[in-house]
Image 1 (cartoon, rainbow, N blue to C red):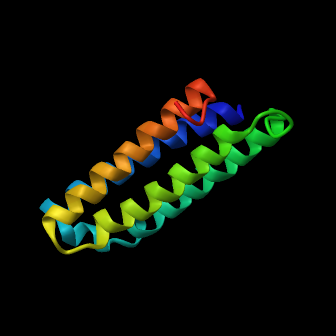
Image 2 (image 1 turned 120 degrees about the vertical axis):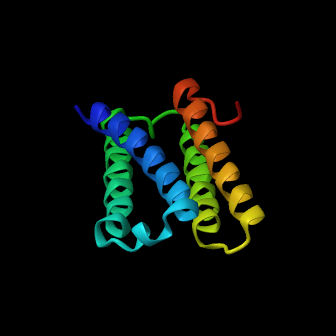
Length: 119
């Protein structure tokens, strides 16, 4: 059940981020809606909590856990680049931030599948 929640919120998080990024270009006034401002934080909190629960439930910290450190490092990158994508005023920097955030997301996905932190 926790894995299903985690997978659902992974998809919800990336769709939400992409949609907010698109809205920032085409309908920026919608981003001022209170729900739109709060929802990503709730989504990402549930995603992080379910990820921690999966790590603890799966006893993945007992063996080789370099892949978890790699995922956490990429998660920090995803957050930093996401902030750049959403808050920078320059269009070029925003696109670079968005693409870098998506590359971090893909890296997290690959690590999650392979359990290998170094690809």
